[in-house]
Image 1 (cartoon, helix red, strand yellow):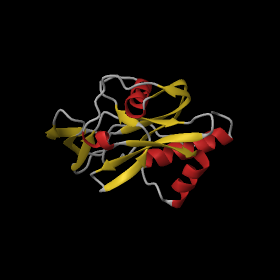
Image 2: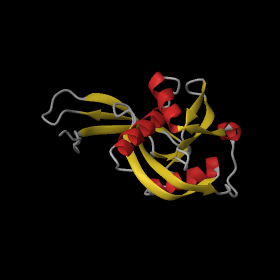
Image 3: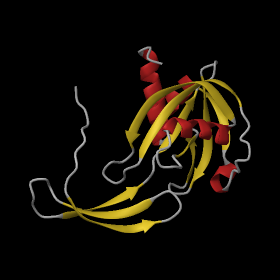
Image 4: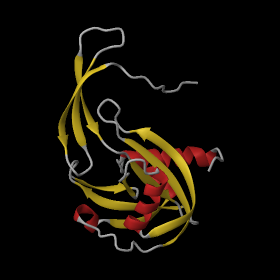
Length: 192
């Protein structure tokens, strides 16, 4: 069996390059190997993390959203998701909030599917994906859909069809792919 392990190399200095009130920041760390040697720099994109929801109904359909993503110039099929807004916020609470705000649903049952680092060579961003079942309509309340979210649409897709879309490359969102594949494996093993 293999496993990641905590490890920290010496940081000789840190410079904040960008930080604002939105989500991401950029810092430059000067580090060295534990045994010493020439220092080197790494740029780190800081991110508070996010939670995603694979919502599956009684007909084995998955609720997906379609949303424009400017960074890649595409309207992407994704899972309801959002940033962990407050330091120390439980990712499950974030998932519950995002399912209600983006898709106007609540769930009775929640299972953790997987957590992962999105691109550990570049960012500290960590995603948490949850399975939501026992779904019922839940109004978004006073949450206001702005910017790209104002154009967000939702759709129910049969899980087997979505799995085919993932395997064929018709959908490309990393969190959706990870969530669908994790659910497929875990449900076949009887874990969820």
